[in-house]
Image (cartoon, rainbow, N blue to C red):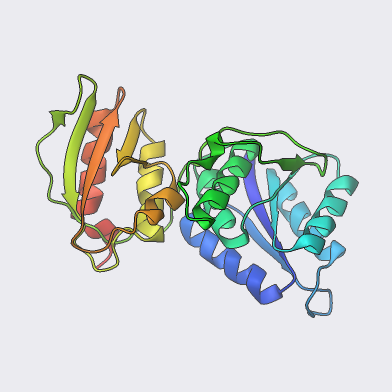
Length: 261
């Protein structure tokens, strides 16, 4: 089943802004902002959250809900208790988690996988590696109940591409199964959010394991955490049945700057 996001915040502007940022990464994912009270003050609204969750469900998708502060989480859990399934609440950094979740949803991940992707933002937010879906007992709350853990790393899906072009070396085997190429980022902004999401989506579309500078290329937040700016070189490595294909596709995107001037 498809997945949509509901972003619950005490501030209407914050919820809308986070939804706008996440939508840049995932243009095909329904993302709804549920911020502020019914009279547009700071706070949360049960009815507003319920309305946005129902919009996701009416679109035939399962709702993954992220919230900013404690009472927003309580409001979301109250909504989930009223509804008969189809809602997963996840504890994750609000903006970073929304971006990671949107990218995962764009690639067709399940609700539990989308929740796991959102939780990887905890590590990225703290400055660690964004491969946190494999790390320990984070919890999400399907239907408001206590939850299950997921070990699924975040997948990717982007919207608008970004800059980065490439000078590629010839393929060579770093081991009997691993292909390697070197690319150079030619744009001033480097591997920021949109190109990172584009890379992750390309990786998700291929049967291959890919790293960039030894960082999993399926994770948008991990790629952003590399801090690669214009002029930096990056080492791409891939293994698996479509290793050559995915490296060629990535090289093309780096070469054309991900469609950005």
